Each structure stands twice: as C-alpha cells, then as structure tokens.
Image 1: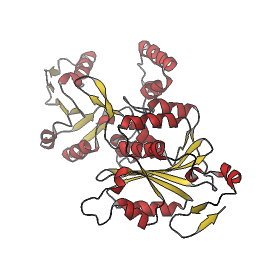
Image 2 (image 1 turned 90 degrees about the vertical axis):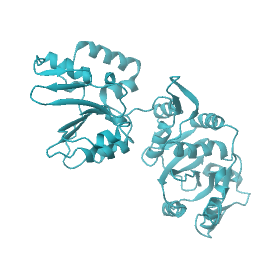
Image 3 (image 1 turned 180 degrees about the horizontal axis):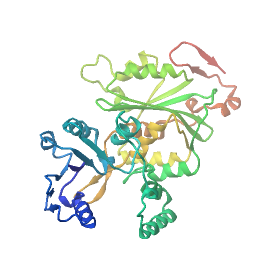
Image 4 (image 1 turned 90 degrees about the horizontal axis):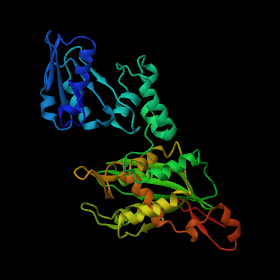
Length: 383
C-alpha cells in the first residue's frame, strides 16, 4: 500500500512514479498498470490510498506486506494511531520517507526522536544519490544562492524556519540573523514577569521574561494540557524566580461551569500575584501588529524557549482552500496558545510603572520605596 495523509486522486500518488520506474527497469511485461492499481504476474499488487479520509477502509485491510508512507511529515498522530495497528501481517513493514518540516511534527517525534527499537532510521540526501543529475544540481545551486534557508530545508533536510502563512516569519528570521535566539542569562536582580494563555481542552502556555533596559528577555516557557491550574502553580514555584507581574488574558475572570471560584481567584489564592488582566482588544490583528513591533526588542533562550519558539513559528493565518489564499484571521491549532500568551506581553506589559523596573533603573530610583513580592511567600525586599 502506497499512502500519504491526504490523497484526493491517483494523480497525487506515486502511481506514475512506480509505473515509470517499471518501464526504466524493463519490467513492463511483469506488471499490469491500470488506473488505480498496479498488479504483478506473480500475484503482487500495489494499492494507493489516502489516510485521513479512508479510516474505515484502512482499518479493514488485510494481507498488506509493505506500507510506503510518502511525504510523511504531513501525517497526523491520529492517522498513525489508525495505520500502525492495521499492518499486522507477520513480517510486515512500514517504510516512511519524508523531508523534515518541523520538529513538532508527529512523524518526527514518533520515528526519529522516539524511534521504536526495531526501526532503522537514516538521514539521506542528494549526496547519497549516485545518479544525481546535473539539472537538479544546477537547480540546487540556484536555490542556495537565492534563498539559503529554503535550500537548507529542501536539499539538506533541515527544519523549516517558518511555514506557509506564518504570522511572525519575518520577525523570527530577523531574530535568528541578529543572534537574538541564543543562551540568555537571567538577571538575578531583575524581576521575572509571566504572560499566560489559558486553554480549556487545549494547551495552556506561559512565557517567562525580564525587561532589562530596552530589551525583552524571554528566559523560559511552559506548556501543558488537560491539567489543573495547580500544576502550573507548582511549576512556577519550582523555578524559584524573583517574580514580578503575571499578565493573564481577560477570560481569567470568567466564571466557568463547575468551578467554585474563577481562575483569577484560584491563582491569587495560590500565591500567583499581582495579576494584571490584559484588556480585550477590538480585533486580534491589532494585537498581532503590536507584537510584531515588539519583536525587534526580544531575545529568546534557545533551549528553554524551544517549545514556545516552535509555537510562534507555526502560528499562521487560516487558509481558504477554495479561494487558494490565506484569510485575515489566525488558524486555531496547537500553536495558538503559545502565540496568544506571547501576545499578552505586547498588549499588557506596563512600561514606565513599577512593574517595568529593572536592574539598570534601581539606582536612579533609590529614593522611592518599592516592595518586591517574592512568589509563594511573605518575604519582601525593600529598596
């Protein structure tokens, strides 16, 4: 079985590729290639199916010896959960070919980062092709000169730095080129603020940042789903930062069904305070534009913020298939929560107030009495 995540017609499959290869090898007398299948005289058969829209059909398949999953970077975790138990014939194999797109993709997570013990995993490229034609070499060199990042993805198998319709693609590219995605040290005398997005059935996300002079330094990131608020409270306590203000979206004050107290009250009772509720804006694109303007002042810890950076890279405008164009509003997917939490900084951070104090400002304002609340305790420092 030759498959991919979505296959609307046989033209989108490898049917022609296999038929052409049969001809090149002089095996046309051994195979009968018809519109939807290829049958061999020895009883073998090639079948072609998409995964996403053929769940019932795939579940009922029997006797498949080999599955070839092409463009597997697009295959969802749900599709893998259906396919893998279906291929159960003794000695059967699943062959997976793909060009890595994003580290968070289900295929990369399942078969590269967490490869089964019996799997053979190998990275191959044009260098491994003894028949690599000169025409493709010229095309490769041209792309290398004109779009080096795309060259790294297409020809060297590197991750894409941004996907189609990515909202912060230019800003992330500039941050990488400027060296602002690196190891970011923590200023011990500077408060750590947090910016949140609260999910219900999806992810909740928290960015940890310091304001040092004109710079926003993002030093950490936390994300999880289907856990209670106390899980996030424990995470904050475990990090033992000198906390400043916690910026949360407007819905933190909403009364939710089954809750005795709203989430703001729950957090404050647990010691997460002071909380600043970020006002709701008229349209999300206003907040996106505010965030884009803030980006040039942002630094990111490459290791601790890796998951958050992936969310920003995957935050994209929704796509209209019929009109073949991106719409004016963002797609809501797994990346939305991390991006929405990041947007709270641009929309809510108070510059010029006590919450924006940093180490460089302390000596200039020593005449003012400032109480700095350390999270989870009654201890305070007076300056």
